[in-house]
Amino acid sequence: MTKKTLSVGDRIEARCTKCRKILNHTLVAMVEERPARVKCNTCGGEHNYKDPATAAQAKTSAPAKKRVSKTKKDSSNKAERQHWESIQSDMDQSTAINYAMDRHFNVGALISHPVFGLGLVEEAPGTDKIRVLFQDGKKLLRCAQSSHNRR
Ligand SMILES: [Zn+2]
Image 1 (cartoon, rainbow, N blue to C red):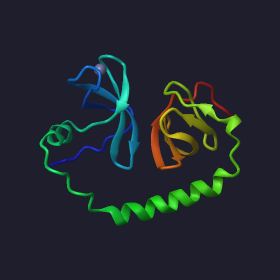
Image 2 (cartoon, helix red, strand yellow):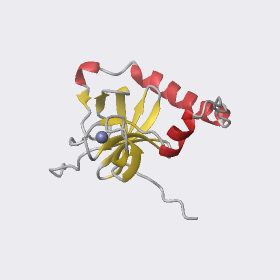
Image 3 (cartoon, rainbow, N blue to C red):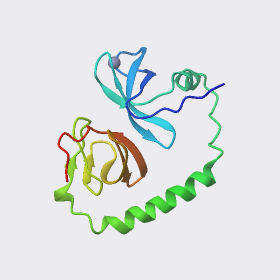
Image 4 (cartoon, rainbow, N blue to C red):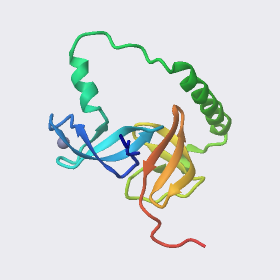
């Protein structure tokens, strides 16, 4: 019925790769509308999100259907990729700030993410969220709220 839209910082049930159980996690990164990365509330480990249903299905050896909506995804990825390439030449890696959930990032900042690599903060859709353009697309990440009001 009503499909709740997830966002970074939400609690989500996922299979923890360490605890090997379905547990509560905190969503730390999104790709488009889907959860991409979660942090286990039990062991504190961060890992890629696996849908509990999909993970169970994967065990049945039937080869998964290839993603159908590929063309649509490709075109948006291509645009983002081109955008990435156009800004990449101006990037100075030495100015990149290591990404951490408890840090605040301003729009325009260059960040270095342990998984996604170098990224540019494009916008801040919420006080504690940033949308970052990485080489393989835009991702929504969680960040700390600004502690001092910059003026
Ligand atoms: Zn865990």
